[in-house]
Image (cartoon, rainbow, N blue to C red; front, top):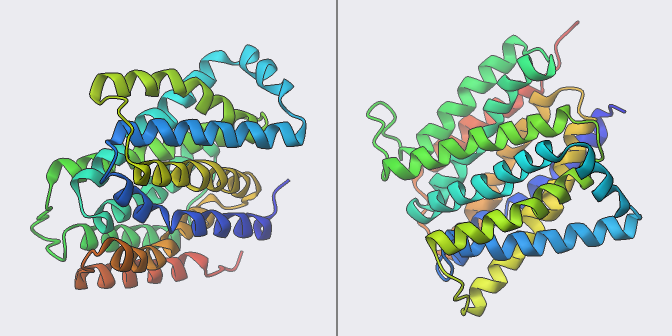
Length: 293
């Protein structure tokens, strides 16, 4: 059943988890390659999700659901975690974390737009204003203020970060349209992704996972980014009456994330980053204003 208040609570919980992961990504990639980080995180998340299903008594639903829609779940696993995180981690490996994370956050714009043809939702005039303003804010951050010249520090890294937004939005659209159990769907996508991730690690990296710092970071990513946050965000979208309003909650997390990046990673926070975030918060306020029917 739709319940916008519950959707907000679940969405804010997911945002709290996501606020820490840019730091975890950047620190972990100092010890593991993108494929290695994805491998350990995917195994961790799969075990966590299986544990939650066991606690809920839903393990028998895995085989039943897979038998009913094998192609669907394989597609989910291919998109997320396999392709999405391989692309995203490569972007983080090439760009300052504050740029990679902000570009990645623009997936909410894509989701809002895709919700119209695929979910039958409408976009208000103020939603369009918020979309444009939020995207411009993200671009100001990504270009360090050189918006007109589009002077990106690493064009390939920027392209990868933007491509990840399309993968991410597409994944959530597929999930929202599916009527099965959200947690079962999530668990199946991760389990079916494991062989793909192992193959990607063998192809583009190796299995010499030695550094304990890499293990610690990858396990953290698996628990909070890929596990708990996923579950909360799935619940938020399932309860949402307006996907646009929920999806824009993700723009809150850069504030806490930037503080962590500054003090734990040591990244210099550019003035353009702060300007861009003000634009994003303004967009959020516009998005949340209720209009008369």
